[in-house]
Length: 378
Image (cartoon, rainbow, N blue to C red; front, side):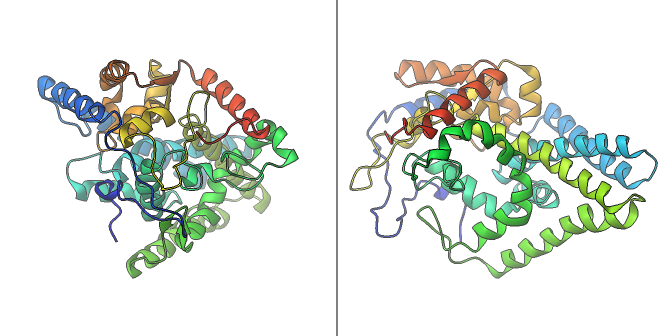
């Protein structure tokens, strides 16, 4: 089963619904032109599209802090209060591994050598997720069918959270802009204990036929999950000389920090003011070409903030990432002006929030609108 982005534009059926296709003639020249200009940037600068020295140093720093904080947690050298702070640090840097290292590696963007990408992508598994499931749900489904109701699994949440305009509207959804942040705290806990298993054994994800997997991937799913549970549950409960409830509290706090970080970064890219949630017509045809569709459904935030650029793995440059997922995120801040100018020339939107806080506010406004039933498929 192939799950690379080379196959991500292949249309598929959802149950008995027509297959989704994009209008290749609508704004057809935008993607070839923006790609030509971006390619020219790398050629003129005589630089590669993958990791550079800065990215390598960043990777080493993130992994060093993650591993160091983990070993210190097991060392029995500190008081419970200090251990709790170490759990916060470890949880945050666990999220940074996913955002900065695993995400790029699984997209094939970290290195031009795919063996390197596969090895570095294993960090995704070591911190409790599954690279194979992510490749399907993110690389293939989300990147192709971004914000399309009933097809993009990222907007098909648990029933109490409404981010899909086709989802049934409940009275409680009016308050989701308040309680949703509690569920964001649980995001990584759900991921390591439930989400990957559910997605792996689900026959369909949106319209994607997910019924068959290589036997090797079944083994890998359970092997790496067992490894994570051993590293972050068995060993801490065995080695840390504290009552079990202190250790459990640290594990939960670790995941609260990780979950909130991951949830916010991903939500601020597609569920903010200005992004569209377009549906196909009765024949399954979308109104735009794939690249134009990305411009209507994707948003950047805080792209001029150096700290955000360092922490969020280029996911605050979500537009550039969706158009060029095989380019390492370390380059996004440099190609963003090219993408924005080209979009403006083709009368396409370039949606962005100037600050991280502003993007959160915009996300809250969208949660309110979904909760009141004000957002409909385009």
